[in-house]
Image (cartoon, rainbow, N blue to C red; front, side):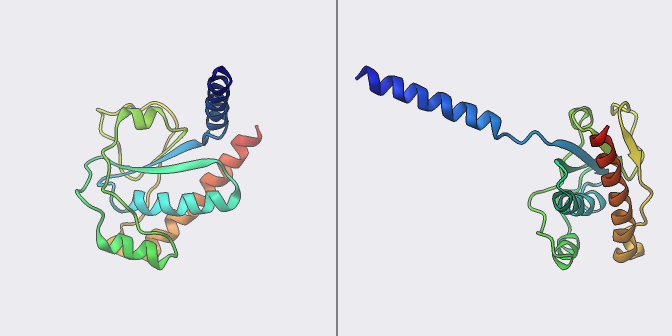
Length: 157
């Protein structure tokens, strides 16, 4: 009976160590737009696709300063048309924790004073989607390629 308990304890320890070693230790890039339902969603989806293709261990998340209640159908339609998966879930409110726990922060609108403004915050001036999705998306992709190059450079140093 004692051998069974020792075996089970050993198996539990092995499982715990394997779990810890297998955890994703990726860094986070945070995309923030006014409503958390358009620019940050599109940027997050494209960044995650491109980072994976480049073998970069950075995960993008999106947040809103004043989040909408849902993601507009048109945004999911654009994601699908771009060969990406539709966004599941509703926009998420930005928190100081999000800002503090992200290695890179990209904002599309100025952050209100109530948020922690320290750290690596970069502003991207992207045309609105009302001006035309292809123009806005191309601007986002150009900037994503620049930030991926920066992340690669930071990783080498």
